[in-house]
Length: 319
Image (cartoon, rainbow, N blue to C red; front, side, top):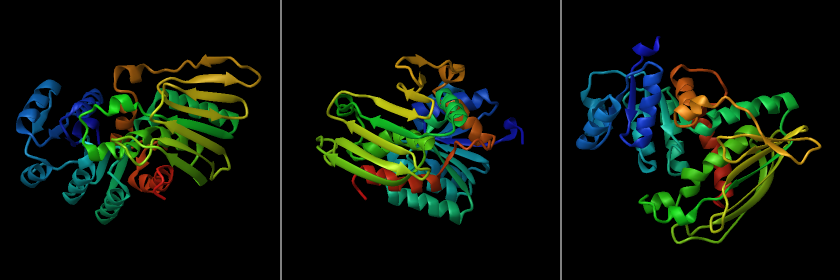
């Protein structure tokens, strides 16, 4: 099926939904968009040159005679699970939802159960897997014979987050809602944990269950890893991958730097990142992978996300 014959529905009329529209237009698809608010939907449609509807996803799908091959869920975190399940119940078989897909393990389990019930595929949008920097790092790792060890930091900027208009219940789950971008990339490149020890202390008024994290473990491929974060101190997101020949640095994650064996010099790696500059980084490649069903090993299924919840909960002290 050529792209111009594929029917795609986007759920959501915010900034991220607009980024998806931009990519879909570039690959030859005119999506429909549905949101809750009629006025917001109208303005969104005018801004992004798409047909946009208000009234909510259930009302729209119950009354439209149109069938969709693919759907993208680009709503707020609180409604990801509800909207994804609605799409499944209405017979859409291929769904791409913004991370983390749900507010907790129970919601992600619910999506998994519904995907199995309706024989559908659901993917979770961790766009850093699709960065040009990630693609280049994968090539270097493979050439070097694999990962020996890695470390990562997921410090969040509390001084900025505390003033965001984000609902309190989302801030309370900020690690899952936001920090897992870092953890997902680290375990995607370095390998999934086989065993892990995790520690958490401190707390913030908007995130009272902890703000200082530390831990270490071993992957299923016997690579060692460690991590840390302090949301009450300066810092930034970092992933470092060590092979027998190189140390690879992601900081910022859109860029890749490298240290050669026997040298203390860290140099930038030349990458072809034009597509990550033209679009929101990672979006073009991940949407292309989803819509054209490319077997690139990068897409994260909802079943993968449920498995990763064991690691996420461990880091957060829930398991």
